[in-house]
Image (cartoon, rainbow, N blue to C red):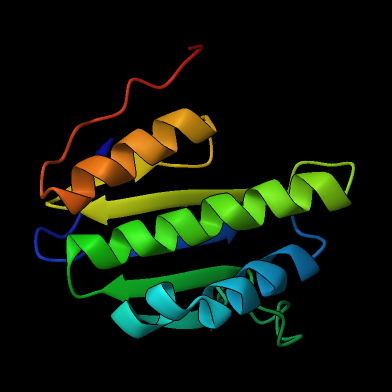
Length: 137
């Protein structure tokens, strides 16, 4: 966990590697097509690298801002479904770092198991923030 803006409820997904950008675009499309995630959040693509040599127009970050913790939960569940779908269709783990930011803390999501993610989202839906115990189950 890392401190962040106290008032924000955000979902961030960033490429860990320079290529391929199709993973981030696939996740962004998945999130915007998920009815619950897209109704409760503003989802945008961004380029986190601000340098003259990176003017190609390719995006490497998804920033989604949710109005409530349940909206964040919808985004995380949509990510979990996308992750399961990707693991069945490609032979590599998508090189995407995913984190949730709420109540001034940043929580890494991509390293969690499916069970840990589901338990974390259940806590969000009850307005109880239970910090996940990340590691082997």
